[in-house]
Length: 160
Image (cartoon, rainbow, N blue to C red; front, side, top):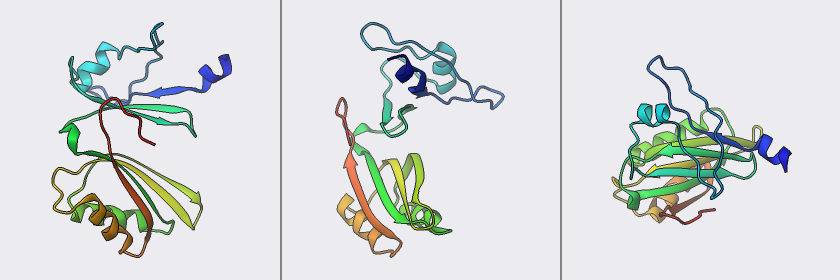
């Protein structure tokens, strides 16, 4: 049990006024709750009642906490699989910008170096003029995206 706690990580990455990344080790209480340190909340301008996004990556055993600014009803999780070639990620990003997808949080990973990669995105789609299915089709039609999924994020539900 101790080993699991040693390798379970909670990332909260605010920067202080000097631009430095702040770190803190915090302990869960008996009900599984954690308290974000006051200095972090002040830096991120988080107040009681603000929404935050918890993202769990079970492969790397990490939990990421991100403030959410925007309307909850327009938040989606996108998973885009594409060819791992120089410039591919930039091309996908350009297409998403063209489609008016507002990226909130992203992480890209190579699965087969030089062949396959995946981009996980939390996005605000409030400015879209297309449906999520049409966005998926537009991405696949670029020729460098192999597959894409878009799922709405809602309060208190797990999304895989």
